Image (cartoon, rainbow, N blue to C red):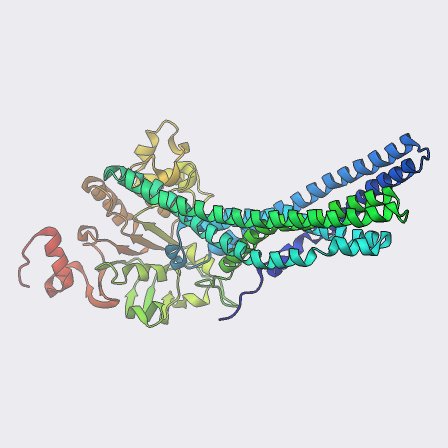
Length: 582
């Protein structure tokens, strides 16, 4: 199996647009670090002079110490602002990049992944990486600069004491190499359980009516509790690992400090080192050697989490698009509406075809109904028409143009679709209706709404077309949502119309009104209708019967009734009538 590239290495190309901010952050870090070295030196000098009985200019030293400390604080503030801007710029850019890419992915990707997991990938994973950029990386960068400079100073003061201060480093490294992989693994496991928890929450809240209807509140609470308890256990394990790192690091720091005091104290007693120099050495060692090492261990957990988050982000960005414009693809001309499936085969998984040699010719303005059992290939044909996928073999042409040769966006702008579960966005009814045609006038919007028999219902609302719709239109009835979706498609004035089970959720009265409107409005458009209720397709120009991906019958309503095939069987079952022999 090919080893995955370290995601932290792959992060750098994503940060290239922000090189200016990164350079500024590095410069501020170096200058702030240099300024931070001055106060310990001054304190050591003060102690040496006091021990020797020399007079010191208190005001002068105070001004120096306060001045350098204040300057260091101001630089720290500027650094914080810089890395915050850097992090937020990256956060905005990576989220926009992820959403843009995810919108181009095949529908199968969204069917295989919980919505909560995908949302978490865009929101939480990106935020975790932002914490790395604004917190962990600046800390590590500053600590590296500090270590480099302080080691020069410590070796100039006393090489033996400098080596003593570094003697614990191998133990730090050994402890790090032992624990860090386990921390990374725990971070991955925690994220997986957290994604599952988000997915469960979304499912339970989205299906709250079903949960309440079956009285399954306690059952759902128990299943959710099992996930949260597993997550709690993983977080505790991670805390134990992090705590072990901290405890061992603190102990090693204490041991090294003790040896420095012992050796330095002996040198002071022999007159080989001043007390101020020993104080200065300890301040530098504890603050700028052990401090960075301990902080480095502290940021291991955020780094591990960010590494896991980056892996998921890059895996998402690496997902291949289902369809892409080929080089040199031309815009789709204005569609007249002739649709041809020419020996079309399609398979979601290799070796498992769901469409087998489909041959179908729909003339401009015709209504074609697709009928068959669930899984027979109806929705797949609609997906190919929308070019969510390209045929595995064969061709799908519109007015003689192979869809693979035209620009995807220019084609989809001329296709309208209404699905059984119509999604309305959390905005006004007017904005939902204008979704496919933002420039439409209010008169055009009202005309489409009247054609879909929804205008009167909208006009009766207190805010009319400006009425806000909640998540997925839950403030509206199913029938109202369906008719708004149909009006939205009609307002876009598509040349090809796809009605995927468009009327199966409506009551009989509403369905009759809607069907009458659709019969009139589909004239002049090539329309493909998928419906389980045969009453909605009796006037179709062609009825295509699919069985296991193969067209087994094709004709008008009367022709198929006379054939005594699957269509006639469906008709008998739905209408409970005995058909007379032709």
